[in-house]
Image 1: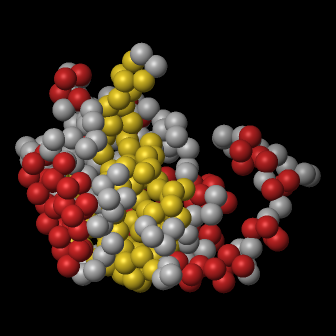
Image 2 (image 1 turned 45 degrees about the vertical axis):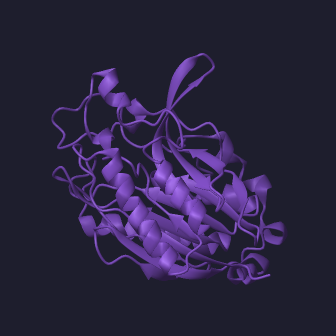
Length: 316
């Protein structure tokens, strides 16, 4: 049986506050059609793919905040995407803001799901590495309030079997890609591909001197290193362009287990890229340089899990 997965990354251009869910889903549907026309069996959409990146706004009215969240999935608005995917026999990854009642209270997460070609949700992930701040910073050019609007994800980094080939797929979201532990945990669980969506501002609100090109460089550095150091495919899909005057960088890419970018978006608009991903490609890396069972020495890594921040230690 072939162990190839023709994978598409469906980059979104800007979504503005005034844009309706229906209009956004229509765009997603069109990109899924395009991916299907190219023979893709898996489509990766961005983080928060149904709305503008609302954490840039300080919002005090709870009802207004909840407008950006999904209380069910699929919802009436997103059902056309699920139905089309089922008709076409295509699986997909979708990021959205999740509102759920658990343990007797409402909880809010930055969430992504994996949907099988038959339309079933087979995997859910809640973002762990939330960037930004909680307090209002009126002097800042924009806010980054993920820590205010979302709880830290509680589902961990898991891996699911997808497609007839049994492809082992993991998922994460945006800032997670900058943390090597994200990918290593899934690689240790047997991941062959990790997919993620992101919404990344072109300007670093915490370091205004940082040039935009460096933001894209760090994005590529993160996903290429993760792919090579774990012998996995990485598919990273952006929401990009100028949303209500605030810029998100593009850089949607598919990265081979060798660390090479094999497909890359050329715009900051709605754009579909695709590649026929051979899952066997990573095996030689996982069996040689990064043969975990042979070469890892976890007895010397305990500090990574036990300590959060830096504590200065010297031996002299």
